[in-house]
Length: 188
Image (tube, rainbow, N blue to C red; front, side):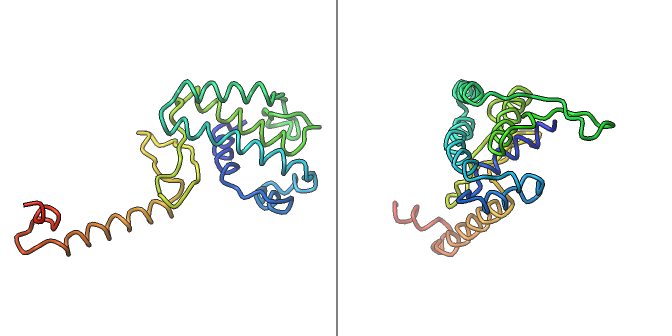
């Protein structure tokens, strides 16, 4: 079981627009074997779970370790995980987080919770975040060595950097002849 991948998938789940079965299948594009098992109930269950999971990312972003741990423990109690050894490839036995009769929603919820719980135990409870780009509400998992990630994607990082560059350029253009910024000159 690749817990880091499951943690990252949990962020993707929170960020996904799951409006119907086709949207869920699109979210599961890299797992086409699950498509035939998707039912409307999975969409409703995952929509509710996403609403429960987002506060975990927000609490982590705020540095509230107790809330992260408490929330994850509450979710684990509410959505019990049943790990099983998978033998679909006898040469590569590994763990799955749900039994064979689990619904798609139960599988995704189990993966998300086990991935996040393992990440929190291994890397710390402040490794989850919300995007710092003001126009974005996505969440992310921060596995950077120095815990420096602030954006959900390169796109948001670039948008923020371009906006900051343009703001600096505008401030330079608005400086009076003496070199002091316009606001400082007006205050004198």
